[in-house]
Length: 275
Image (cartoon, rainbow, N blue to C red; front, side):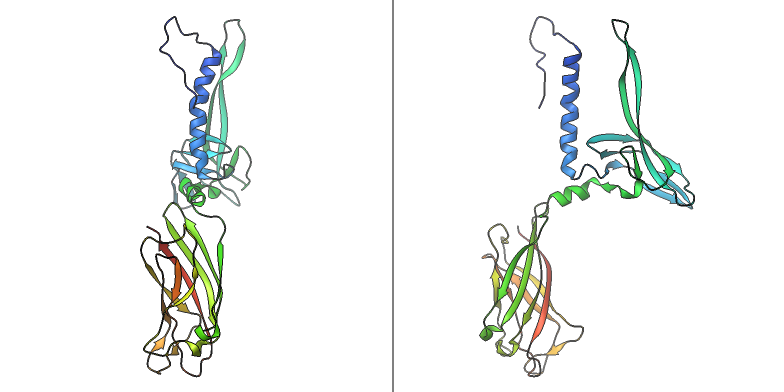
């Protein structure tokens, strides 16, 4: 981080270079923090910029947004788009000239700000539709979780139901949670333990970093619109108890179905707290 030590005696040599150093000290920090939100080419709302409508009139409140690597102040307003026009955020750089000691005049003071307008839904470096803006926390959330799914292949022997399929899992560091998804098919469902002694069957073991601190439980759903009876012909089955233990094992309480059902599939879609 840039800084200047002003404690030395003798009279500090203040020049344009030192002032530029100070300016970069805060702009670099602001942009570094703002870039944590993700893609800088998609405008991210930092604060304010709340949209309200009254008939065909659209009002956007004052606020700040981050776009193309810069923090921009927005002055709110109201527009009434017609035809195919949409509310547009328009960025302008308003400059003020200064006269230097040698008499030269340069546009030195810059004030980049944005206002509300209406026009065709096009995106450029200096204007874009309000509708494409995302709240800053949206991008921050994307950066806080894995972008791609990990996978765990499942295969159990015929004696333990002949379960096959894939479990997909992904971690979210912001919420410290694990998401599980997948479809599993029990190809030899008649080999599950008979009721009422149904057992939990291990589908696989998650790697370190994806294991909960305490046993976690969730529901696995029978993959059909109807239900089936258990092997005693007593209970109609739609959901199965499932869980992940502190050893990382994913397990499902598979039920032996009525004798007319030789195989069935289940789907899982659960969010597991890891702390």
